[in-house]
Length: 525
Image 1: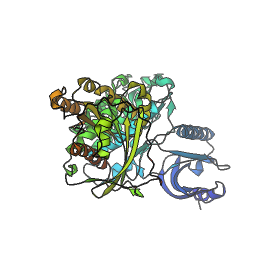
Image 2 (image 1 turned 90 degrees about the vertical axis):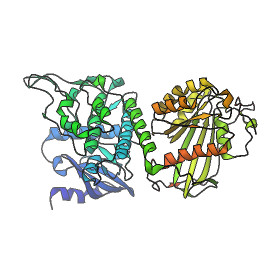
Image 3 (image 1 turned 180 degrees about the vertical axis):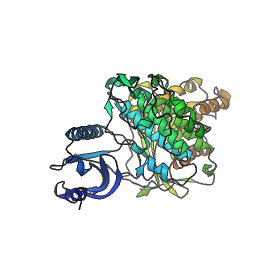
Image 4 (image 1 turned 90 degrees about the horizontal axis):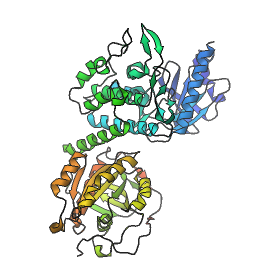
């Protein structure tokens, strides 16, 4: 029995409630195991046993420091696109073990073992990229931004449903206020490393340490996108991005083979932007997210297999023990555009619009529907349009799956304010990529129309949205509006993969509404 086997067999006696089941990954310094920890399946990351007795004390000290940095950083993070940290254990006389959530595989393996053509279908590529950029946006948006510094396909882990999560934060670094600073050169995987992470050289001698910031992760993200687009790990030539006389080679030139292989891929312009040598010229995580969201929405709209099923009926049902889908939907827009009327009429076709009152703060309703053969739980949040309640609204944007962005076609000012609402939605929805539909309401007042259908369509197309016109008086159009949203949301995930157990309660939460009449001028029936 070798030292490694003896170490593993004796581990149980040193770490209570941790059982290593099988190896699922290996690196230069250690291994990752599928394990049971307090009865829960987890991933356990530990060093090779031989290192503890290697006699190289400086190496061991460096490893301990890296491990300590990783678990401290992981412990401080809480985001659905960053691997969840559970704990770190210190077996007596042994190197520490980091315990994290267990995922399916890493992106490098996913690409390598994929049997599809292309290796990563465009829709999957966009969704994985969105997950990763949202994780980066979260890390870079902290008060003291955390820069990963080693983003690569092998550092991105996937769930069995292909949700991507950023992992392996051993060389991550906190950058005070996000400023560029002098830091250790090339801490990450060289082929993914940004050119500014290399020190300045003269005749192959270091003359100045590198200075860089969060944009190094954007560069690595671009390389990751390129790898997914071409279906293999990056190819670069020459190997070093710095010439003998200290000049840096253009990354577009070093990666010319892969870039040409991309052809006219949907994300080519984004890749080229991320791979700019000058970090100032690279897009921000926010800009990348916005562009990817447009691509995703356009792909969903163009897909022939996702046509709206006009025969499917939305039927309101009672509380169900389980649901095929659970979605959170927001209504946003200026006050008086008829947001509440639209939802109230959807809930109750006999609802009298003349009795509608202005929403104070927020109104929340949870309803159950049967759509075709699927059961859908909708949490619908009706927001007030007054600036007084903007702070409250930001809280309810979190984890929103869909947004109805409503304007009044008889009031051009409400349409003029749509960009502000759209910007707020994209800024506050940091944890998901919501489907946003622009709604032109009050089409029953055609004689007072101030916003043309063409104007609404043009704005929606320019911003990657869909555009629908409705009237609170026409229940059929309202039903089609919700049907479109539900279709869009359900086809954004694999049908049947989401099963949600809800608490045994039918309670609804509704914040108080004022007794004053609404400013909505829809003609009552």
